[in-house]
Image (tube, rainbow over all chains, first blue to last red; front, side):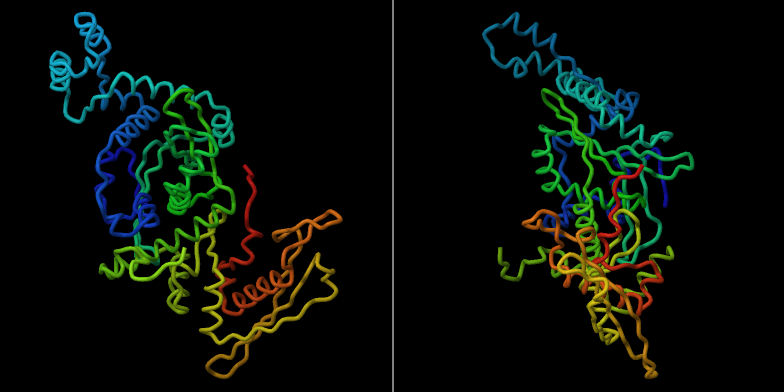
Length: 281
Length: 147
């Protein structure tokens, strides 16, 4: 296994020869063709990146993200022009924002004051969470590896190599992985809502895949769901044995599909598995 | 390539197993062969399995033990045979509740049979000695939290 402690997100994602968790999930949800489609940048992805960075390293966060403090300029605009409803659409505001963006260094991104506050609320919620604290305690003594990148070195029996980048990995004194923590920002961290996200986004496969690659028992994988809106609750989830067994079995099937496509990248292996059949529902 | 990977690849090639026929156990890391995988192995090696209920270990619908005898003949005509047992009771299978209270296993005979068959076949073909187990007995390996 090759391990990198300081690989950037961009570098990590550029290693396309290695199968990732996102690729596995995308194949399970649709097809190889869909999984090959590049992921477009979105506000949700940007927010997730900022949140993860904040949770993992305050120093890194402040290097990469610059808070755009616009509350004062908005207040000034509104004081002068109380009749307008969208101060952020004014020339004055746009000019102020443009000046701010021009002052950024390469690799820096702008984050709004509101998003910054949200991330801080989420962080405070997470560190106060008792289940999370208990979980950490159960692995004591441990060391933390945040956003380390792992690449398998030899092809497995499907002819595939893999990569994973756990949000937070707990390792023992000998640097053996003992637990994985995955931060999930969400609107609703309740059981019902998270269960829905869990299956919709195939978090079960993600857990099975990460544990498979890092050779960790799946009961040491934790999703920490943190609400990104009031009341900013945090809840910790893990997989029950039945879910874990099903996910592991499905993971093997998906690897098989990907392995076959690698050997024969034709229409037959790239599209929907049921594209040319009548499927009963 | 790791030893487990090597072994699995050899066995998969030999029996034409694919990703639907096996997977890695999510808790203990060994390889689990699914029901379809066991069937493929039986077909490939022309394995014959016979069954017997073990009366002294079987009690009404509450506990059932089946002995499976798996037999195959190699290319030289030599006969190999392995006996194994499968049990089903309310400790190791899905249960239903009795009218009088207490638990009864669902389909104990069928469950014990498929467990005995899978064990016998995997022992006969050498999978067991490679640390490969059947899906039918994987309930036994589900692990409660223990940290």
